[in-house]
Length: 527
Image 1 (tube, rainbow, N blue to C red):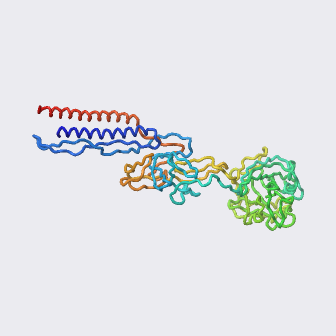
Image 2 (cartoon, helix red, strand yellow):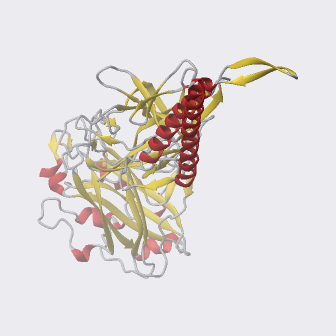
Image 3 (cartoon, one colour):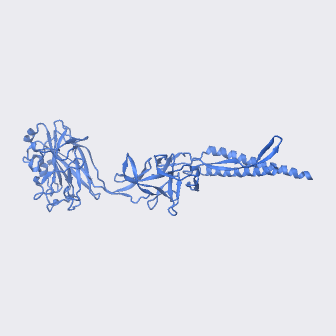
């Protein structure tokens, strides 16, 4: 190599070390940038000249050039965030975001997302996050997706109401309780007979042994109170027939003013039966374990006096095997009996369910047929006692547990994201609704992605096409919620590179100054 050649080699050294310094500076500048991936400059030597030597032909190099700038996609550390929509990927994969103006798709590891004014989940640039709507079904416990990959948009901040369809009530009825209400002709329906839906207080405090109240909801999400009254049946004649069994009567009621049923052309809220939804009996053995249950509701063919026990027929059963009553809170003419087209049917679960299809063969046709005859009390054709069933132990009457499945309109209060990438809404009515599933992309060669700034990448010819899937499946990583992925820049490594690059630059500069001195020396020879 000539002296001038050494100068050009030095210049190439200055060039590559300058570029390396730029990469190091960019790494250090982005050491706190969310989702940033560090880069490393890799050098290679350039072409060679062949020269003759005493030992034969040899080669002399002509400097260095930048072979590549290698992007490190190693995992960055996690940083906690107070934002519900801040997410990070643990493992392989990139979030996908679309420019709403051009439709161009970008890929990023930065999960600092938020909802914009239009309900779209967007990144810091306003680009829309891609994924799927969540289906209401699951397969093997995994939330399914529905529809095509699209921009995730929250179109409603409300959870619609749901009418109560099931009531669970577990009580203990004191075995030692006295019969507070005894009708000699109808001892099993004394409380029923004493109910007066037209009175200011339909049921007096002295007319029952125990009562419990719960809130249920109609189709519009309006709350209504159901009250269940219990009274022990202890008529001497009944007790002797029962052979040690305990019998309790019960009635299920609502506020008479809320009772919108219309039967036989009569509005129930104008009758003494207003608010009476179901009546029946519970039979317990001497140990306080429930053995049988009857349930009667106002039949669709009822006529005349709707408070007459002859109009109250054995209740129908739900698909789960519990007796059903109808609550018409809306006043719709097509919602007053279980078979009506708009009926609001509610199953009553006191702890005994029917594994069969109906009532036992000996069940009476209406409540009036029982009279004071204990033997006329029958039960389900195949009763099954469930866990948490009501009891009749010798301890104070109390409510063990009560629940119902209805709820009012709810308003979005928070967002949670699962490790599978399922985005769920938490609503004020206690509901958690699966909304979306985040989409992830992976590549055969992430090094081939093209940097676009803003920690965004686009596909390149060397990256291969994106493989699209969901978190926690196949080669895709998992999602960490309330978390952001920090830059993976290693400050100590970058400082070492800074020093070695500076020394390399100085050495190449020395080559140029030394070669210049040699040229000056050669020029001075002709003087």
